[in-house]
Amino acid sequence: MMNKLKELRHARGVPQQLVADLLHVTKATYSRYENGQFEPTQASLIQLADYFHVTIDYLLGRKIIETEIGKSTKIPIFHQITSDIPIHVTTDIDGYEEISRATSIHGDYFAFRMPDNSMEPELHQNDVVIASHQNDITATDLCIVFIGHSNATVRKVQKEKDGVLIIGYNFSSCVSHFYTSQETRELPIKIIGTVTEIRRKLK
Image 1 (cartoon, rainbow, N blue to C red):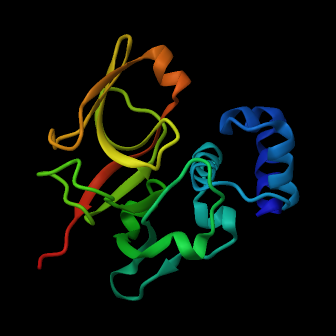
Image 2 (tube, rainbow, N blue to C red; image 1 turned 120 degrees about the horizontal axis):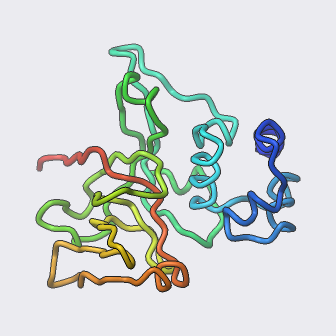
């Protein structure tokens, strides 16, 4: 990975400090990512892939798996995405989902297994959502989001003039909440993807 990060940063002509600020880490920490001494978190990998317009597989030096039938692409399903625990790719991936190559060439996609019932009835626990890497929205979207330093989850996010409204559908287990622009920065609230598809296995 270290060679990929250096190559991408040099190609873009940006200093280490700029990328470190993007990831909310020190320059020394980012330098250790490039030197192979530290391993980025899943959240940082997603941000890096989004910033450099590449896939996580490219950063990790892995080849994208393509199926013969239908020319589809397999993307990893993450069962947990954390903002502060180093990634161990082989243990954090919970299988793969297939998306068409026509879809994959228009963006960088990943899959995420719904961790709880906070978005019922639209989303059930263990549903798999297909998401496009994205760290901002223009209006309202179903997003994979960090609220503070907790694990990522799925919420409807609505941008307002003075902040964002985070909406959970299951009122018995999740309270919707408006966060001011200042609270959004301080917690922080980070969008890492927008949901494009929901997949559910029937019993």
